[in-house]
Length: 360
Image (cartoon, rainbow, N blue to C red):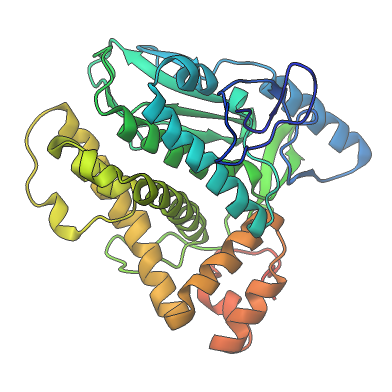
């Protein structure tokens, strides 16, 4: 199948239906019209916008995404799917692509991240060759309009263990980064440099300070817009992974050493999951997993419970739609209706922020 690319014949690539008989994972040209993502905008005078366009195009034309991982060999996602998986693993990703395509259209995102903008680390000669969603220094890179991820498992071992879990973990990473790619962004020039002045529902003032402050270390629930957006993005990605896992009955086929990663990928972690860790390379991966769950997943879940109550899912969808479109009207109205006038400002604004109030 073709995932949001263009086929060699030039037709638009779309995620296929599950019942298409001969779906093959192939790649065409990127759907990205030039140098901007679907919801990216350039601000400033015509001359400033022209300079921004030049600078971004230069950054995004350079495929040098692996410089921070010199020990890792990268491959494009479509090559990994076509040549690195068996049929059962490809089926996992195929089902997920269909689900996330339909779901993201409901939220206002009508194209997925082109898979020729996704680089997957497949082998490593480094000291910590354990890959997956929680591998350090990976993810979506907005200035390069591309995603850098790694396959789950020991990258020093050419034999892929648990191919279906590897595919499910890649699906989570891809679904996650599709939302980052499709989020609203505004760029400005500042002293000749590209500055991201808006991202989703977050703003920066003229001094570069963000609208909301960092959470305290012991905060049970987040009030930081960066964590809210990251939590919403990953909640959605894990929901899609869970739906695929349930549909294909993957839980019964995951070996015991990989069940913790499976629960993480499907959003079913429990606090007790991190009580007993065996030493080794995988333990560092699990510590990163625990840190992410504590700092992002659990805090966002608690935020939804506190602010949304029985309407937590509605609040989650309003947040994602606002992140994609950059329009906070419906989110602000909902917050005002449930928590009083000025709820966005009272909930999120940092005393250090000096810019306008976008949430009103």
